[in-house]
Length: 204
Image (cartoon, rainbow, N blue to C red):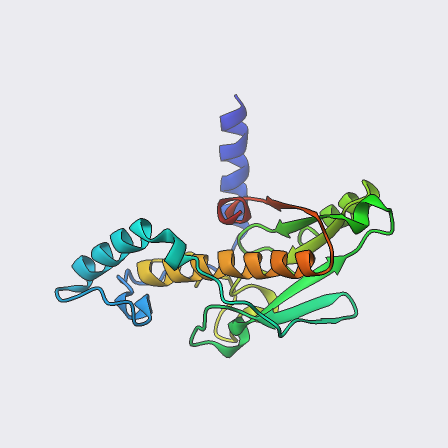
């Protein structure tokens, strides 16, 4: 019964969206960014690259330290560890909701919204976490909100028919989250959790 309710809900959401764009399937080997996948067609190269990245996941998710954090009026910005062809997407934005409680000065939660969440998505959840004495940080995912280039109306480039781009941009989201957590640790937070919804939960 529960699955039927969720399926109906998902169908209603899908039917309400009028700005979807059907994009062509692409292997996206040009998104491998210099990782040598050898010779062959794009499908073979992508398969070898994916297998290598799975075997070397520490390298795939390796993160360079960042010293370019900027917090102004509750908005934290910093450069993404992954550079994409879209300048807007290369600066990470996260809204910070510090708690005044003693517990909230030591404990924080990083919040990752769902796919295509708008700028206010999960802000209410951050306020709720504050009420429980926890500081919260709401991360804008790649290609969402102000990170979305003008040609997009939806966050199509993080999950799309382009396989290589989808893998690299989801990797970007993970590295963005890790940099946000590193900043929280620099501020003295000792216990840091992560909470995500839908795509945000997969990335978490």
